[in-house]
Amino acid sequence: MWKHSFIVILTCLFFLFGVGFAIQTSTFNAPDERGHYLYVQYVHETGLLPVLSADSPNKEAHQPPLYYWLSQPVFSLTQHWSERAQVLALRFWSLILSSGVVLLTYAAIRRLLPTRRLLAYLATVFVALNPQFLFMSSVINNDALTNLLGAAWVFAIVFLFTRQSVLLKKSTNVWMVLLAAAMFLTKASLWPLVALLGLVHFFRVPISERKRVALYWIPALLIMLWWLTRNTLIYGDPTVHQVQHDLWYAEQHRNFLSPSGVWQWLVTLVESFWARFAYFNIALPGIFYLFIKLGLMMGAIGFLRYTFQHWSEKWQPRMQAIWILCLGALSVFVGVFWYSLSFYQPQGRYLFAVLPVFSALLSLGLLVWLPKKLQWLVFALIVVALVLADVKSYALLSKYG
Image 1 (cartoon, one colour):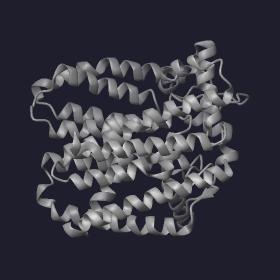
Image 2 (cartoon, one colour):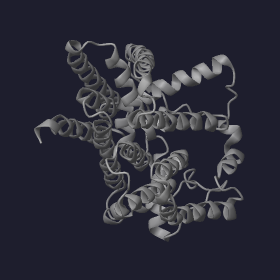
Image 3 (cartoon, rainbow, N blue to C red):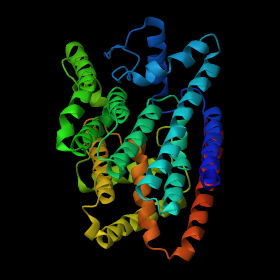
């Protein structure tokens, strides 16, 4: 128990900051929060799913339904409360879901690289004390479930490459398929990760077992087919992306495909990944972003250095897991870029579905540069710096609401 006490304390600290952010942020003063609230309310009142249209007040009506279904018990228990109290209850529900990301990050990295305890600690710190992740975890948004399932995907990939037995238990196969179905019914940004999970699940078992694994996936595929068919019948578009494009193209589209435009998009994406609240207009002092960018550069170069050092192990299962995790993170990044071609959205929170991967790669890249005697000191400095950033973020949210 004692060896995991730091993670227990870190999770409690995450929850403490999250509760503070939830209370200090005024009602619906968070990205798309009103739309997600209206979705939950509509499902409660009608038992149906909303439909996206030009005259609809809810721009989130196209979202897959799982987060809103799971939020129904909270909404039902609080339906006679004031709107503010009900919003806070739903925010705390999102925060509970998001706390699972912290625990799964630690569990996945400890399993992937069991001898690198400090790496697991540092990566989990980058998750739990990321101000933007804390803010988005403490508001009503289907990102809470998206990020939890993304972290579960990371653990599932690690598990498939590090298990002792060649064969998978029946219960393991069932959980893999349930995870894939849940991801598909939560947010479209998770769909590439679902495909990767299916491929890894299929090819990481003996050839004699693949037919049985394929049979397990049939129910999940039918659920996915139901959602795509529903969208096609209602909108004529299985992804609903074209409908969004037609409704709000003129309002949101910007032509940023120039070197300076892409660079500005990338800078905004990085800064909002760490701390740009509300709609980018509440930011920390510039020195914070400077240190972040320097750290990212060192981490990226350090990860390349680690790759070259371990190139001879490139076909070992644990290194293969790292490549798959990198591929998943890249697919989410490319998806955000592609989405921005129609809807200019350099919001770093869209990358939180693979936040454990980015945090692990950054930690790995930074630790490569440090001798062991300095690693714990730098770790302590990073913890202090992020806590101070969270305190400053809390102060900003208190001021601007």
